[in-house]
Length: 274
Image (cartoon, rainbow, N blue to C red; front, side):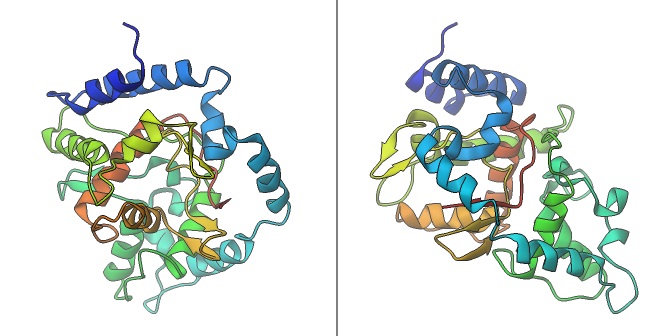
């Protein structure tokens, strides 16, 4: 079956039965038709895979990446023991090294999506440390270091087919992606599926695939590091919509959907974006 533009949007948006693999295959076939020259790994570059002029500037900036101070700070923070003598290494598999590509996880015990950022704060709270701000600062630095240790590893997020709660969380994330909201009446899919590769004013719109691979990111617009959920909130503001809080159930489920769609795309975080 040939899938183009609106038909793909329609098929995924109205799916009545959770079938993440079918969604993933449909989406990839759509992008393969739309961008035949791109390989799966290219999607880790985001919009720079589609905009050669912007890519030249991006590559020049990354000769001396502006995220390096945060990366160094994150390594120090990650390896500094808590007051009780334990550290982040005690909270994660493989001592937290090279595991970022596995997140978000489905936490079957608590029946929820567990993002890496939430896992970092869970670790802190478990060790009687204050939670970090989910959008920037020390959280972005710690995540930058953890992402860096996973660079080149393919995103490998699981949606357990035998757990209806996991499938429901995935479906909720997918539904959120296709739901129109705000004064501009935009959905995430409006830009990143239906109009991927086209221009919105001066900006080329990036495809969905790989949207979780490069985070946290130093955005030139921010002048600092920020997390994926900070970007989610910024997107809501751009379309004049009320945004859920960072690491809310809605945004964690959204990240779950996006990450699963991006399976196979390599981790490139921390990164630099406009």
